[in-house]
Structures are given as structure tokens and as C-alpha cells.
Image (cartoon, rainbow, N blue to C red):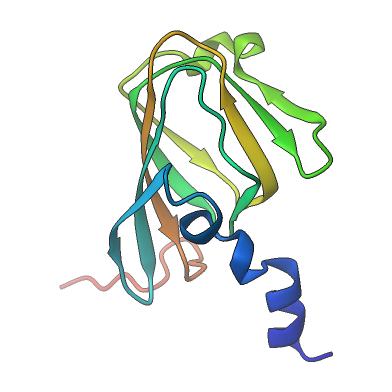
Length: 130
């Protein structure tokens, strides 16, 4: 198996957030370097299992408690146990997310803008000074 086949197997196209959970993810912009998604999960809502292939900077516009479950349905994160997360507006970093679902267990909508970085950058890479 070559590297591109291994990559496709690790991140199957049918589980991409825009394909597997389009009712929760809207594409705002995409090019070869970044993909920007608008994610909304209403109170009581739950996404189907999906992935986020690239690490991302997240900007939390509105907050609600949530539970993230892995592909087996096991809880991987319960935001109610991470009090520091509930402070919108807030910017956060996340690594790529393997297959998971997210359930909004709070009383308000969860609204996040994510800027997924498709090209890995080393510190200072690609920066040019005058």
C-alpha cells in the first residue's frame, strides 16, 4: 500500500464532515491550504459519525455542553468536565479528529467556525519578511 492509499484508508471520504454530516457543517471557503467550516449543532442535536482530517483553529461563537463519542460510541470528551471550555467567544486548537459523533447535551446551540490547516507548517515556515 502506498502512502496515498494509506491516507485514504485512514480518512475515508464518506466520513468527511461535509459528506457524513452536511446538516451540521457548511463550507465557507476552501483552497489547497485551508478549509473553513461553519459548524452548528442545535440543543439536543447529535451529528452522525464523521471525521475532521486536518488540525484546526476553532472560534467558538456560541457555547453549549457537548459529549463527543468515538466510532464505538464510547465517550471521548464530556465538555461538562472541562469548565474552561465554556467561555465564548474563544479560540481553541484541535488536532485532527478520527471518526466521532458529537451530541449537544446543553440548552443552547453550539456554533463554531473551524479553520482546518491542510498543509502542515513548521514554526516560521512559509513566512517571508521584507
